[in-house]
Length: 108
Image 1 (tube, helix red, strand yellow):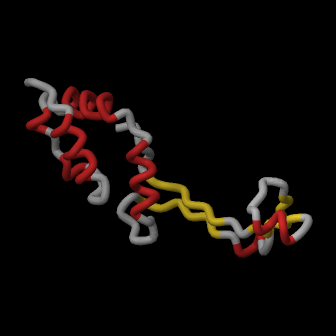
Image 2: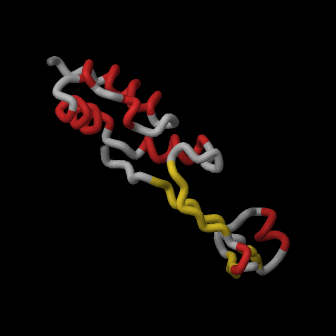
């Protein structure tokens, strides 16, 4: 599988500054920003099944997969799509992997 064994989450706090209120209200792209409270930034290397990982992050990672290649790789590794041991993979990824393999069934 082409996903890393863990996810590196990073949260940074920034301050966006517009030249005037009208530009801010229009949410124009002409802004500057400064990092705030750098010492309070959060950086974590989390395992896939860690409760701190939002579902949206997992979905974003899975969306980037080449689903056909992943299904083919899994099927080849286990010698058939029916023999894939999904229990070897993180619990949060299993539904996505099962769906990918089911959708792109590789004949044995």
